[in-house]
Length: 258
Image (tube, rainbow, N blue to C red):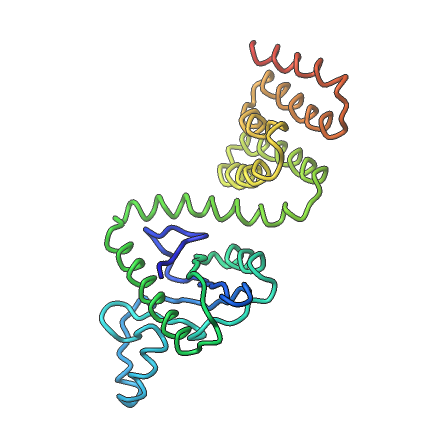
């Protein structure tokens, strides 16, 4: 078995992940939590040798060469709510989400062994990522990851809204970005743009959210006019007012050519 990353980057794992399987018999989702310890741990210091050996096999080889890794629990448990709940949890906790394949959960010994093997695989990927990533690259990657996580969080919230409510949020964000640009508030600009990026992924392409994102940063008088027309166009589409749509699009084209 090989890990498949649903959320996260296999070249730079976070060091903590939700590992899930599909039950071969029922197709239910079963999951466990992986942690790669940032310090080496020698279990022999704390437990009798025989017990340390037994626990090492169940916990992904904790205390062996390299960084210790733990799967808790040592075999996957049923995930209430299925994959959608698991995905939401991974986003909210900023965890990697990795798929381990199909598994017969009735076979306890096999489940424990497979989980242990995949825990070690995840730990090796983590160790390789640490070794291969220069300090400056880490800083840049963290910056990009923060933006992606912010967009993911907004997306989870916006998924609960109707299309009309999403457009209402879009209108608010446009105003927020223009204000933040004028005030040179970079943090607020980036946060609002991440939220708008999430909306762009949820709203149909015909709303031209990408063009609205660009127009919202244009503080010129012409840019403001185009932005307002683009937002107005969204509501004409939503209300299926196609008679006024053509004239409005002609105005947008006219201002865009100036």
